[in-house]
Length: 500
Ligand code: ADP
Image 1 (tube, rainbow, N blue to C red):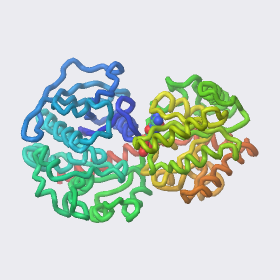
Image 2 (image 1 turned 60 degrees about the vertical axis):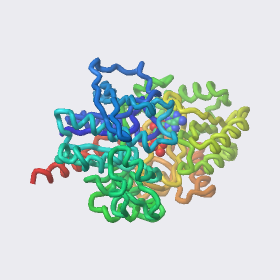
Image 3 (image 1 turned 120 degrees about the vertical axis):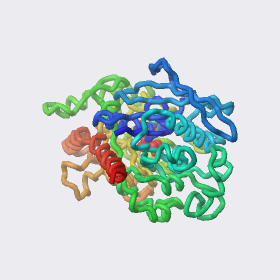
Image 4 (image 1 turned 90 degrees about the vertical axis):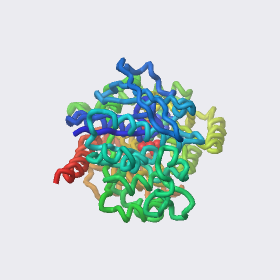
């Protein structure tokens, strides 16, 4: 099958969050399963091109925007896992992808609509026709309806479009003008059964993606149910309900090569639980050296006597930032050390965390590191004993899966993909061998306190149980193999329909 992914992120070169990891992990697995894959991503100026080897033949293609045609260069490179990456460099004077960031510009809607149009303009001149175009989130949702219009309609009549919603909270609200910029009729799309929102005031790119795609997925089964409710659907629940027959949840996996404590290039000391003969002591020795290094780097009290709890997160309300602050401020209560690694897109939240960072500067037990740094994240997964994800909602969540692989026991709120992947050591209905963390139901201080209390009590008082859970966690399988097969099943089902 020839599959084209069009997305706004790709790990590790253009990464803000989990979408980037998904593109790498799912991509690697699709290639491994024998499919032809091309991943199209904008060539942002923040991409470190020194890390990449481009093929010499850069293709030039023109694309339409606001009544004119502009040149784009398409650079080809092979990423890890032999994934063919196509990076789109725009020569539009708006310098859409040369803004020193991936998201957060006033004209994000236009930047990504431009990207959708340019990607399709380029693809339509290629000899091969994709069987599947797989698009992700609002940034590329417009491909679903653009492809069924004008010259694209005939060219791609046999191509099926799959949309994956990685987070319902970001929808790409826009106006008729924005659609007209890429050659679409704003008036035609501005109807309730197409892109218009319930209030009739604006258009919604994610809604258009849902309406016009041949199939829609989201990233866990629990989240797939949650988004059909008023609370989870963020205004799109009725749209999803009326398209429910082409909608399901496919659980994300993690890329077990990129995230591998046995071979991780960022770690001080590598360790594994994969060999049968390996015991907890050996794993612990590997983790201990990473922990010592980390505590030393951040001038924290060097101690084997306390568990180290990590948080690695975007600092947005969804992630439960009030609960994070509560736990950081009460670390002493549980005799633990805490490190938060995160960044806040909202300046108010950022400055609030800067204050906290200063407050804890001389604390031996708490650090706040306001950076986005891939290497530091890998080191912290390896150094920590526990990993907190107190999200108010969480479509899938990858950090808890990565933490498991590095032997850091997740403490999570029971929501979305967290509920589908983490099973409480004390209370889960699953067999003991599947239990891998601590779970709390209600996103309040009482809830998170009780889960942290139980985790710390086990760490201090029942080492044997803790060790078993760490071994189980590290050996659990959240690789992409199974989920990629589910995607292939969906792709095949769509393509077969065509041949009937
Ligand atoms: P989301 O996509 O909502 O941000 P996920 O849990 O799906 O959340 O994925 C988060 C990804 O981003 C993980 O790979 C995590 O390690 C990474 N990440 C988050 N914050 C940082 C940071 N400050 N520095 C480095 N990596 C980070």
